[in-house]
Image (cartoon, rainbow, N blue to C red):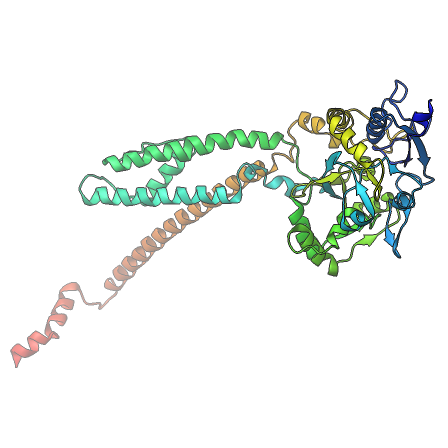
Length: 486
């Protein structure tokens, strides 16, 4: 190279940190993709493209850390250690890794124009398939508020129909007033088994029309379609619905946070002087429920697998790739805000402005590279050795291809079983009432027969007065006779 190019060198730290820098190729670091090494790392491809665009020669600076155990930089005793410490003392110009801005980092470092954005995610232990998980599948197409509104509408319709039936009786147009029969007809109409439901007034018939269109056709037809998609949809095995739900559980001390890097921007923002929002609530919660610190990603994931810890990381972090080797983990990102990611340089770096211009002029290449590593669905090996485990059951496509299992339709089976049990209980109750009625009739007949037998037996006894004598005695003892005699 010429002297002009030799003078344009930049020292770049290359850590063993997939997917930013892969170390599974023959040479480390491999700075350009090839047939033998198509995925050298998505940060590698970007920084090499920018360096070539700016006519810089890259001088690799290697770290001795193994992947998963890299010290990315912590501010202790008024100095930076780790990777950020090397940039602060000018041992390197930058690192092949994207950092997020925090208050302490902005004080000592400069950041490039945003290269990409990342979203923090929570790694948690997934729930297992049990009877309770499939119990409510039949009701999942609608929220609880929707079901409550539907039942309220149904009861209002029933009450109004009963009222109309009563009014029709009063004005002489109705036949028989039976609230139970009216309710039963509406239930049959709701279940597409209509009986003869009609009214003698226009208002009553119009009410039936509205009930049929809204309650029967619209609501139930949508429910049938949504129910099928709900049963076929892969089951959500995350114990949390969003980030706020996680904070509530941590607040109640049912879970705790764990990390292998306390200098992560997530925790630094948490400890900053925020006054509102997610981070403020997180800071208040972790004051009582302390964050547990471990030495490596493996230790953090092991604790998550116990079901008592939550591991906050970035979606593009090496820990996220390692977590995919474990089949008992779930990921929660709902409710989390994205954070811009940048190249980091020492304060007042001579090459910062050039990199900013290069990033702006090469955004298309950056987007294509991001798409290649994260959205194309390529199977990117983490090492030359085979992965620990491939969780086929976690793949969305495999979940969609699965036939309906008993677990999926367990809620429907419970509803059917409940209906049969209720029907049987009502049948037994009706039999009980029937036999009680028969028993009462039998007792009445037996009592009457007994009284008749006793009366006949008494009249046939010797010396017993006959009916005429009895009448005479009764007449002689009456008050009227006494008055006349007097």
